[in-house]
Length: 198
Ligand code: GAR
Image (tube, rainbow, N blue to C red; front, side, top):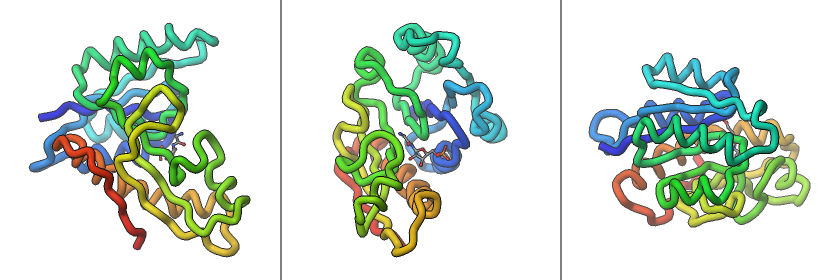
């Protein structure tokens, strides 16, 4: 059984979907949920699901990312994870952290990468007049929101979309995409999965 640790910063809806998907004949189980924000709503949801949690508040570390990450690694490695799933984890990671989990860390990003790495992805897609938005699950490498693409889901942009409405429709599709990609990844499959919206 593969052991999965999930990192979040906020509501944790993707984390809940990932955790719930890992049952029965699934080759992985959720063993730990961590956050950089002790007040993240997702931590309570993880505890309700019976998953161990931890928080390392990044703020007391100031700009010392390496010290913050050393504390993250200490907590994560105590749970001996095989896979790290970033699910709305909003801290930029140093190359050292990425190297530590090389080949076993995934992220979900709310755009059709390589379009729109970084923030405000939905506003940027609408502003550019794109017909399609979506989400991408990729392996994490040192460059931000880059790395081999493991799966994408496409979502139409509607004529009078707002960033919030588009984000809501993309999030629903993220909840389909991420569990499907995680399962394949845990089975050792890194072939790209493309989901049609429905
Ligand atoms: C999701 O839309 C995810 O794609 C995005 O944050 C949201 C988290 O929602 N991630 C990023 O923007 C990463 N740069 P959730 O906490 O409800 O899963």
